[in-house]
Image (cartoon, rainbow, N blue to C red):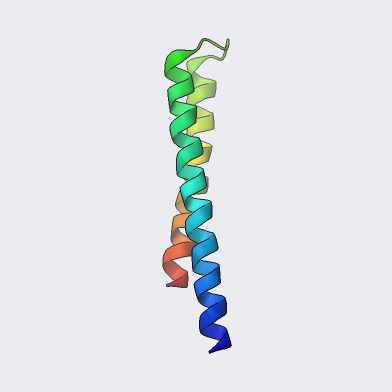
Amino acid sequence: MLDAKKLRKGNNKAEEDLDSLKTYYKKLRLSMRTTELGKMSEQWRQEIQEEKIRADRWEKKFQNAQ
């Protein structure tokens, strides 16, 4: 019973982290579209790719925990 409770708590935390990353990713994309911060487009692409990789890792962890 305790293990199931821990697993549920872990799943909830993973879901929250994944949602947080998705929100951050959306804000980053919006920021790219609406502001000129002096970054070259390649730097933006690299930053976005890193965030996608991070979000994918969390999603895999979450799915493996289920």
